[in-house]
Length: 311
Image (cartoon, rainbow, N blue to C red; front, side, top):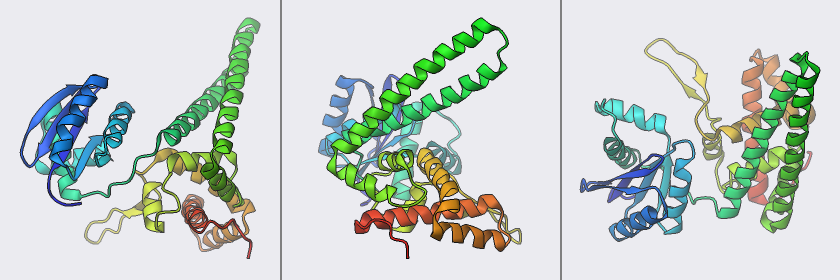
């Protein structure tokens, strides 16, 4: 990414605060259709090398999609990393215009890689997969409540809600299945992913939705995007510990679930898991290693367009 014009955008529910680096130009627009049109019109002539928006619980999605649709190079940045960068700069004050300037300076300093945004169909699939996960969480909670209820009429109330949620889950499952089968590219990728023991419908479709880049990455990039790349805290003689985190949380959860199944039923990954346990590694560390290896295998399978083959 060339160190030319970089734009930082702080996103709130109703407003976008914009900062252009290095000129220092700052302005705000409404976070609605008219405001996004104005934003695109003002930024396109600048030819920015990057336009960065901070992830803000979903408010940034429409903004990033609009900017990407206009052909602008969009990056969605991690708010925790931006805040840490602001603290390093001594920027203790926090206002939307200051945040926009810090976002621009953060991107100019770190130069993160710009990745193509998912297309509309992939975003739709991601929303369906996310909604399916929410409904499953609600079903689990209601079933727990049902066990604790003593009054008969309250048990019936919970049962009605469980029935409604189950019907909605079936509708979503049908929609997700139709979406995947209706797209030749998705169908092929789905079949490749599910050829690996340990990967079923839900995991494969979460990967398609959350990691559309799969097959185009090297193993380090894939692990980083999934939040499975280890990082170490240490200082002086204190060696500290290694951690994982960041990346795409839903993707990481899906891979972890796949790792738990694969560590029992996939011959290659079962052997890896048992080898690590025999070497004295904690079970959680071994499962994380299996999840990382599983992602490496899946990425290679999609890249080479060759299904799983047991050696």
